[in-house]
Amino acid sequence: MASFKCPACGKGRMETQIVPNFETQFEGITIQINNAEISQCTHCGEQSYGAQELQRWKEIKLAKLAELNQIPSADVVKRVREHRDLSVSDFASLLGVTRQTVHSWERAEGGGMRFGPAAMLVCLLDSESHDKADHVFSYFVRLARERGQLLRVPLPRPDDRKPDNPQVASRLLQFPPSAAPGFCSPPLTPC
Ligand SMILES: [Zn+2]
Image 1 (cartoon, rainbow, N blue to C red):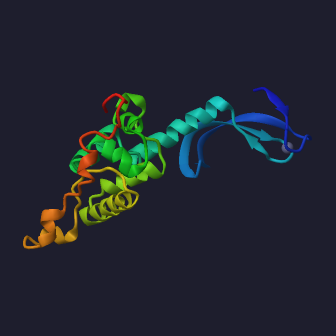
Image 2 (cartoon, rainbow, N blue to C red):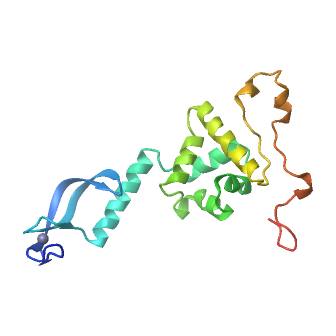
């Protein structure tokens, strides 16, 4: 295989080798790579990887995260949103993203979500621990309310499970009725 001068020490040569089972930390995540193509300096041990090879590693990383259910699929995003009776607009407002972003998350062919804080939040809202998910959801609703965001979402509370709780009746948060029905102000096209 071709070799080139080491960019780190300038003394050795970078020689490419194939490592059958290579384990590495890629963007903070441990992955195993079959037949990793690695260039290593004969003098200082500096390693480098080709752009195509790094792209392959990235795909391996994404496949691992998807397998671990740490990147919600398009179906999961939609399920989380619909489970809370949220419109795309409200879900976007709650999470501080655009409606287009939510649409892209819910479109499998668009690649869905990327790994990151938003994916973790959706995983949390989809948590099997309903109390935890409700708690997080309520917290987001409260934050949205504090910043005066136009939302119409049912607010879950642990107290709701007590049937005689007078607050149950008022659990539907409704924002200034004058602002209804749409959030777009004229003369913009309707949402
Ligand atoms: Zn070197």
